[in-house]
Length: 100
Image (tube, rainbow, N blue to C red; front, side):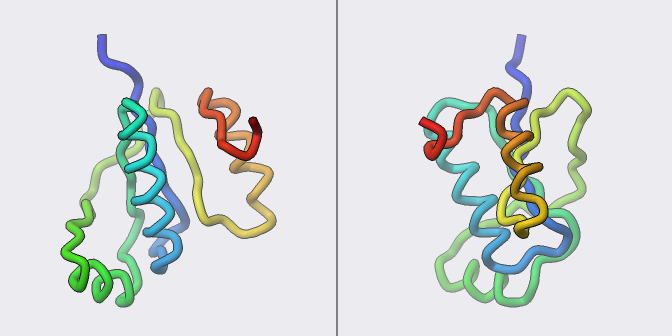
């Protein structure tokens, strides 16, 4: 049986901060042997294309959907949503390094 997938995402049409956080945290969890994907909702800002091209980073931008059984991690959210991010992390069973 395959482990439930963890989906790392941010706000709609993210800027470089949002995409960097999604990509970086997904890579970190993958290196810890987690089944992780990131999901970019909408179209990223132009700055994302420029930096991706410079550093030859292939971003996965497609229409994949987050499934109900997937665990979701929100990154690069504003102050109003930071509490929601902590709740999502806790409910997904992922400990963030600051909580240790």
